Structure formats: C-alpha cells, structure tokens
Image (cartoon, rainbow, N blue to C red; front, side):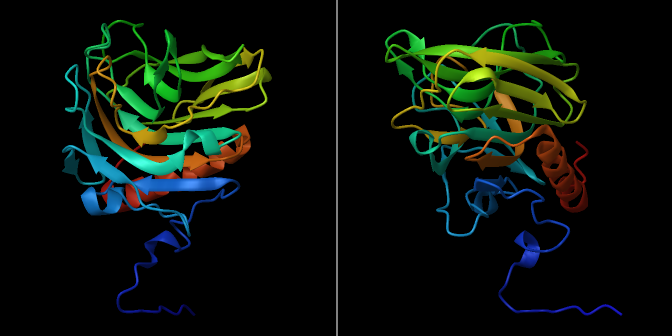
Length: 260
C-alpha cells in the first residue's frame, strides 16, 4: 500500500526519493538549470542562491550560455560558492556544445572558477581545449592551479569526448594538498578517465565564485548548453561519482527527456 502526501506551497522535488542526490558528502552547491527561476536556486539546504549575468536562453531543462570576446557580454550563472573556501573540489556537470573548438573565440567554457594573475591562469574548471580542432569531437580538460612559489601554475588532465554535441556527464576532482593523482577528469557517460599529478597544493582563486555555463573572461567565447551543476568540498571516489551521475541521469530523463 502506498500513501501520497500533498502539501500546498511545498516543492518536494528536491527531497523526493527519485530526485535526491545519492551522494551528499561535502555538498555545497546543486543547480538544475530548468529556467531562470530554478537555475539560481541552490538546492543544498542552508546555501545561498546564485546570480545570473546577462541573458542565457532557457529551454526545457537547460540553459544555453554564450561567451564573448567583448567585455560584459558573456552569459553565465554565478553560484554563491567561493573557490577560496574549498579545500578539495569535485565538480559534476551535464553539458553539450556544437561550437567550433579550433580557437578560443569559439571554444566553450563549461564550469568552474576563473581568473588571471600575472601571466598564469588561475582556475579550477572544466573546459574544451583546441584539440581535436573541430566538432563534434572535443578534448575536455580538468584544470587546476597549483602553488608555484606563490604564483599559480596550471595543471591539467584531459579526455576526448567523441561527440560533444550530445549530452555528456563530466566530472573532475582536485585533491587540495596535491600529489600523485590529485587531479582527475571523468566522462561519466562513456566511462573515460584521466589523471594528473600536482607537485604542490592547489591554489584557489582568492575572489572568484564558481560559475556555470561560461566565464566572464573575454578570451573564451564559445557556446555551451548546461543542464546541471553540482559542487562538493570533497574528493568523491569514482564509485561515488558513478552513483551521483545515475541520480542526475534519472532526473534529467524523468523531467526533461534529456538522455545523458
């Protein structure tokens, strides 16, 4: 026998059995990009909502974000999660892109924190690099900045996504203390992984929030569709990421028909 409870004014989707996240260890942000009102909502209890910059285009279950080579034009969602507050990092996101990947002006930035100090990129992010040079195949890199005598130095691990135009669940983890295997990237749709060593500790950006969908940088201006973003202040294991991806996959399919 099954009982159903109806409570006026309560959105039970976040806590229902089919939609609750399977892994909550270190969880600090969870955004489902179901439209402007839903996208800003951080579904983690006690956390502050995000802020949308400029005008993404909203579709059933996702937002279409674009970068720009002109200041103040890029569209993205800023979470309330500050990079400097996180020791370890796990990012999981559901994305796709049909941009040309051959140049920065057309490559998409997927999710992360961004900035520049001196000539070094200061970032913890998932982004598409220049190889392969054309869609639909893309090289996706997990990028983290380690401490290089007080100046951040970029470390990356990368995988090839055969068809970036299809919905893909990507994740990355960064062990803040550095060391062997401290940086990892996962294609949770097609089971590809890569690992990199960080010879010193992660150097988080002192002012940046984690952004979803694009970046305020004028150097990376591609377009990306983003359906979900989850952030943990912990390094999830591959088994935990697989469970988390399964929960997100169920939600995407049940509510929006998105297959990932």
